[in-house]
Image 1: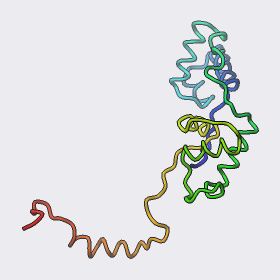
Image 2 (image 1 turned 30 degrees about the horizontal axis):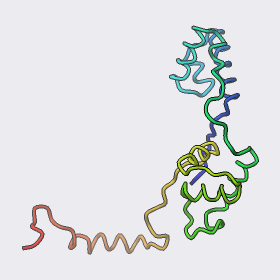
Image 3 (image 1 turned 90 degrees about the horizontal axis):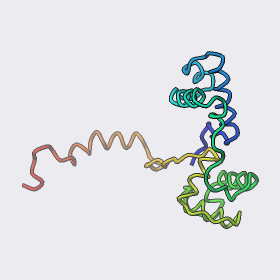
Image 4 (image 1 turned 180 degrees about the vertical axis):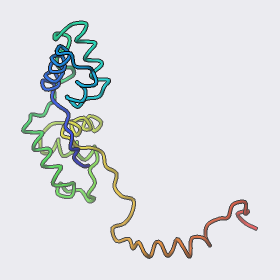
Length: 167
C-alpha cells in the first residue's frame, strides 16, 4: 500500500468549497472558471451551479453527514497509519505485503476495534492510502541474463504458429 498525495476533504471543508462556488457564481463567474479556481471537475461545478440557481446558497449546504460514523477517533487513525508505515513484518507477518485481512487483524489487536476486511478499504482511502500491486519479479533478478535467455533460448522453446504440438 502506498500513500496518495491527495486526501479527501472532510464534510465541512467540502461544504465550504461548495458555498465558495456559490459566491463565485453570484459574482458572475462561469462554471468553467469556478471549476478551475476550486480545482474541481466541470461536472461538479455544473452540478453546484444548478443547485445554486435553484435554491441559492442553501442548496449548496448539503444534507449533512450520511452513513455510520467511524468507530476510530482521529488519534486511532493516526496510530493505525503509524502501524501501517512500520510495515507488515513489524507486526509479525512473514511477507512485507499488507492485505485488508491483515490490516483488520492489526486494528483489532492494537486498537480494539473490529472491522470487516471489506470496510477496511474505506479507512485506507480516508488515510490517503491506495492499492499497490507488488512487482512480479525477484529483486535478485539479473536483467542481462534474462535478455540473453530470451534472445537465445526462448525462440527454440516457443511454439511456431501452425506447427502441430507433436509430430
